[in-house]
Length: 223
Image 1 (cartoon, rainbow, N blue to C red):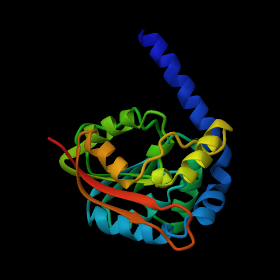
Image 2 (cartoon, one colour; image 1 turned 180 degrees about the vertical axis):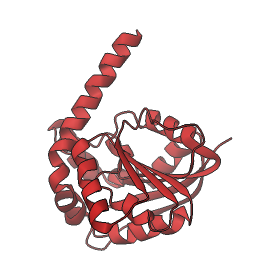
Image 3 (cartoon, one colour; image 1 turned 45 degrees about the vertical axis):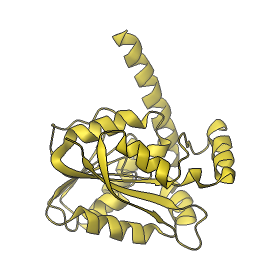
Image 4 (cartoon, rainbow, N blue to C red; image 1 turned 90 degrees about the horizontal axis):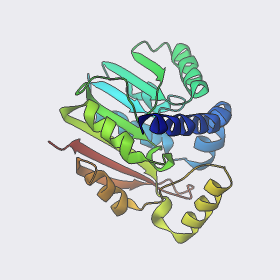
């Protein structure tokens, strides 16, 4: 049984890597800049909410936009992504910006290579809805958080209308942007709450030009 599970997991990882590797060079332009005018405000908000002088982990960092922003006030930032090209893009930006307190690595969100209770804050931005089994990632995030640590999670509000649900279901079937979980804010909050966290704040973030809102939830590790 263990061997079968590993084979299935390896298959999932390779499939995910293949997709994200392919879009990495154009990710910021084709996804972030095209669809999310709210992103600068989102980055500012995350930076304020992580606080000053903490040890931070970002899961599914992509090209490192958020990790490099919060690094300005964090003591240390670790940032992981399943895609090597995404991490390569992030490292290039880190060098250009002369930032030296971020450590990027290629790792799976379902098996984080960190000790228990290591981080003051974990961020997972714009990713949980793209994961087929986000509960596995949330279990790992809870494990690596300090007892009083906070978890900042953001997803696309794909569940806010039937139109969005249908469009993104078709996209996933066609092998385009994978969106496995189409939730509204209350559904997302409930999902986080049932995954071993206590939700302390929730809100929608949306620029007037954006088609879909981003759903922003802050929670604490439930003891």
